[in-house]
Image 1 (cartoon, one colour):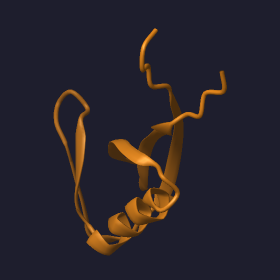
Image 2 (tube, rainbow, N blue to C red):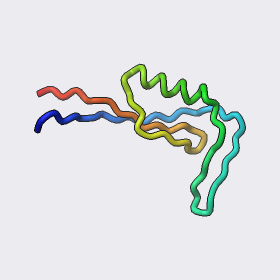
Image 3 (cartoon, rainbow, N blue to C red):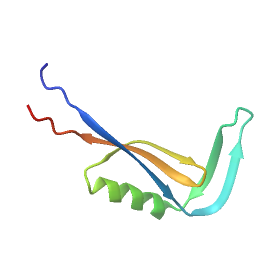
Image 4 (cartoon, rainbow, N blue to C red):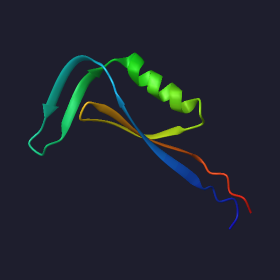
Length: 77
């Protein structure tokens, strides 16, 4: 087995303010939102980082910042 690392995951959804709510969608339905307030994003990142969570993925969906986080899971043998 060796030094396998196990992870625990967690998802957060936070409403964030936009500087200017500009949304553009392509023909496939992929949409981009421009200009989130940087301080809002940093607040979410720091909040979870203080608890030991590492960001895996970040997306903006339906007015929310959706983040997937991971941190090493304690395995008791």
